[in-house]
Amino acid sequence: MQFIATLNQGFGIADCLQFENGPGGLPVASITTSQASAQVALQGAHLLSWQPAGQAPVLWVSTAAEFAPGKPIRGGVPVCWPWFGPLADKGMHGFARNLPWAVRASRRDADGQVVLCLGLQDSDHTRGLWDHRFDLELQFTIGPTLGMALTTRNTGSTDFTVTQALHTYFKVGDIRQTCVRGLDGCAYLDKVQAMARLQQAGDVRFSGETDRVYLDTPGDCVVDDPVLQREIRIAKQGSHSTVVWNPWSEKVMADMAPGEYQGMVCVETCNAGPDAITLAPGQQHGLRASISVL
Ligand code: TA6
Image (tube, rainbow, N blue to C red; front, side, top):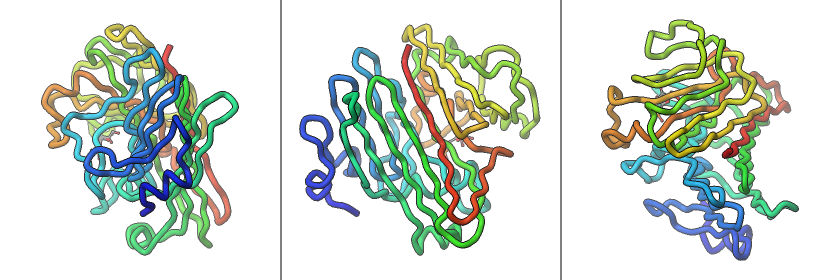
């Protein structure tokens, strides 16, 4: 684990990027510029907040979220890797979101955006869970838009297959008045109906627990929020599956307060289900999302 003072000495940027102890004492990178503010927990390279200038916060985090070493955080952008969903008795959504990532680089780009790069490599611990050698890198670009680029490299001597997601939680005014556009006509696997394969008709609207893996979806999605009077566009590369999730009131979770479901929706940039990625030794894959508020 890198210490705060060392991090600031090596990667801090005067007046816009500093490292500090965040919620629960977890080390975070706090970014503030005239364009936007953001906070990234080093545990899981977990983006906790992003707020472009003049906009309400774009990401949602539960008021009951747990901030503790090794515990997943309810909200922001969890990194689900090297598996999406359950895997035997190894827990949901892989191990990357529960481990400390190293800061690898930071800079201000020519447009004044802050670029922060975090990395994770295999260890005895990870190989005990998933016996492969890898290098995982997440680059954030923080400005009027949010850029996230998750690069998986196979540094071992055998092929491996991953499923993954940038599991983004968006803040909305009222889920009942919110819709997600861009998935009309797409096939999806409905986790609420025993993974039945169905087809989306029109915009995705919400009136109960919604948990769907949309297939063959390389295009943009838009979260249309009439209450906050904004549209959030999610553009992506390297992903052909999209998950839309709202737990509604049915799914009770210790780290989500009652009723909070009304103010959030997940639109997740994935390689999930049949959209798995297999890499030979030396190969790499990039999963990218670019989020903008219109
Ligand atoms: O992305 C939707 C989903 O797979 C849901 O089924 C639910 O499990 C959600 O992820 C949250 O998972 P987590 O392990 O973070 O509680």
